[in-house]
Image (cartoon, rainbow, N blue to C red):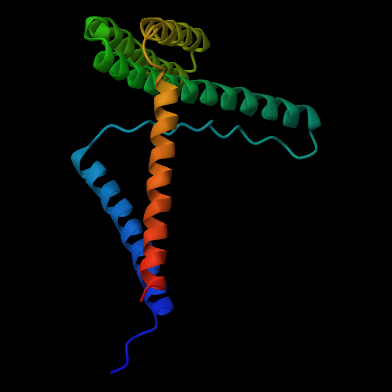
Length: 183
């Protein structure tokens, strides 16, 4: 039996890696749902009421109402992202300055609670409560940022980590190519 050419083996290996990766992602999603792990809520602006055809004023009012609801969805999503960033920074601070850890964790919990409150305010249609939740979350995030003053920059650390991981990926691909060329 003749061995398969290297380029066919590489193509099959790449295809298998893509299938395995997709399978792992799907399997991970099943595990998350099975364990009931928390996930960020998916919010969408409710569909506006239909308007009669040929009524441009009603169509404009409908579009304005949908745009306002979509803006509120974006505000809530931004608060969830801010709460996640605040939590990351609080963990960073806890690892670098244990004396500030408790305060950072408390502020992070406050930002998370404000994000949840913003979601509840969005569902209830309460614009005032949404604004209050925004102020609370942003204040907590600023408090965590202030606690991080004097520590190494988290964003710089993340950039360095990404560069290191990308370099490791490039080196591993080069090693694989060289091993194919040396055959």
